[in-house]
Image 1 (cartoon, rainbow, N blue to C red):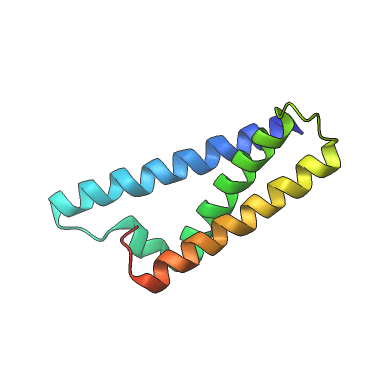
Image 2 (image 1 turned 120 degrees about the horizontal axis):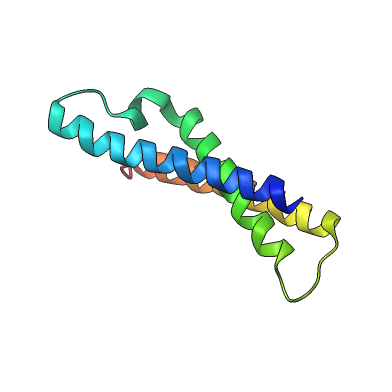
Length: 96
């Protein structure tokens, strides 16, 4: 499962960098911000994938030696928290 978490983390991180750097580039060129283009659902997906990867990697490499089932549950919890954080920041009007 470590490979699944690593791929999820890499994809989430790449998507996050694309949105942030694309926003900076769009601001300079006067184009639409990618964060606005993908909308709240797209940002929630990025938060979920990144949270799943971070939670899974953290649980797999924990010194507490979790079983893969517990590590998976921690990863799913981290994905849900990632979605919650994105929804919270959207509600408060925080820039993405």
